[in-house]
Image 1 (cartoon, rainbow, N blue to C red):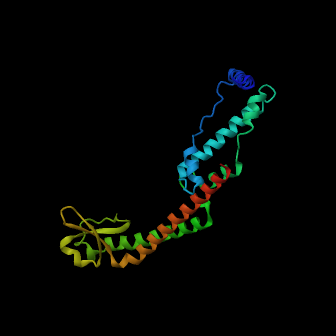
Image 2: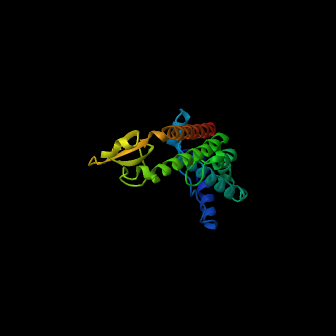
Image 3: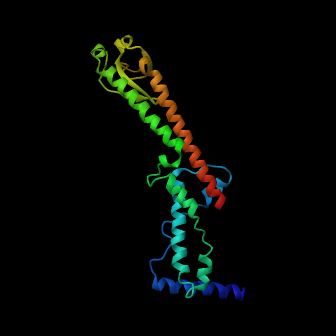
Length: 223
């Protein structure tokens, strides 16, 4: 019922129709409705990597739309004023790109601590697997093994031992087969190596969580 409001909205509609007639492909493609998640970020919840990529994609989509409209401000002044309100947040976009790849993985480049932990993790796993491979290949234990393989149970590397030979290899039993014929044993000889590897995994997880929390705080700042 407000004539000025009606006129303003009609101007926007007319300009939008005119713009679409010459640029039919213009859109907000790639943008996501992030409002529910961003409200959570405001109160301290941490956004996961896929959501942070959605934030990045939305900002990039907004940047493309803003520039497509504002570069034709003379023809579309009202739309251009609206588009000028779209925040580009280049620092946030660059920071997310530096930390997270397109597979939603937090990259080594996200922090020097993460890169260091992952290097140590790789070395620890190699040492662990080397020791286990030697145990599995040892003629001394050939008759005790159900199979010459290395597997995992509960996040620990184990080897399958025939139940009747469980005393042949000292270790921690983490699981057994349904039939009970096979025990999945972590040999005592590799427990310390396994502890080091597991601790580094936890260190990696904590550092990734810290990075995601830091990025989330940056998102909340600009929201």
